[in-house]
Amino acid sequence: MADKWCCNLISSAASFPNLHVTDGLWFLDECLVIPRSRTAHELLFRLAHDSLGHLGADKSYAFL
Image (tube, rainbow, N blue to C red):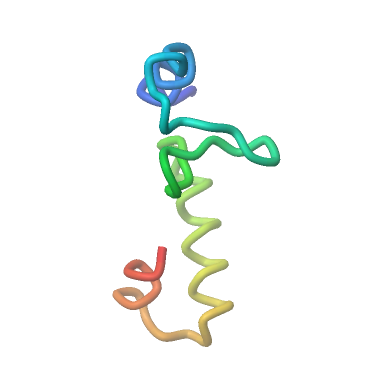
C-alpha cells in the first residue's frame, strides 16, 4: 500500500521549494522522506542498529 502523505507530497512538489530528488531519493531540506512502510522502517532501524555497534534501541532511533 502506498503512503498517501508521500504521494500527495510528491504530486505537489512544485509547491515545496525545499523538496528535491537526489540519486532517486526524495528529501525535504536535508531530511530523507521515508514512506510509511513497516518493512522500510524495520530495515532502516536494523541497518542503523547494526552499523552503530549495537548501541540499543533508543540511541539507534535517535541517530535515525
